[in-house]
Length: 280
Image (cartoon, rainbow, N blue to C red; front, side):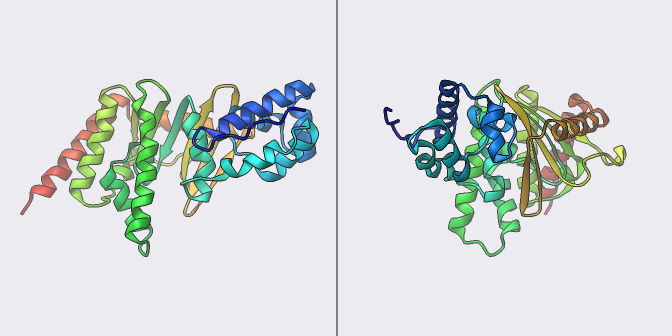
């Protein structure tokens, strides 16, 4: 057979690897379910690999090379796919986020990464990693700001964020930092680039009190849910499980302030922080 050319790491290797997997599988006439069965993964998981929303691990790659007769192509290129600038528990979620067409999230404690300013991100990392060097903090901040470029596209991905009121009230980095980041969030909302709601304390209990929730929809692949807590995160792809998390987000949104009232509250809190900063 003709040897495939290895992937260029400067491109999007995970998406290209997924495309190659789909072509190789279809050439062999094997279904997604049949290809995944020996690995004890679902056909939908294979579909996510092919769509580039999930990372291909070496054990999977070796199986694909054997079954699809690809001469070690997938195993060789796993190294390019595995490299990431993000922490291990978030790397795969960040990669899925980059190709998502829609993102819905609930943030209980912090402004979500896509909406953060440089000063806010730096304060978050300095508080969360008190022994990190300046160089390490700079690298983390740069990676987070790079993620935010997803919003440079005027329409994709759709971003719908529900902020707990605690996010507004928890002073991270000082009043000036909070005023700046809240104005950024409100500005994106006013431009209709993002949908933002605030779940006030008065709303009481809800389904996602245990932690943050991010839902990602991608073309040609089932949706994913990412759940994160202190120092760890989990990406879910089981359709029934993801459906439960989608219900949780929708119920939270139904209990939150309307987008219009939410923007008014965010701007009001930002103004309060500005006044606090100006006090002698």
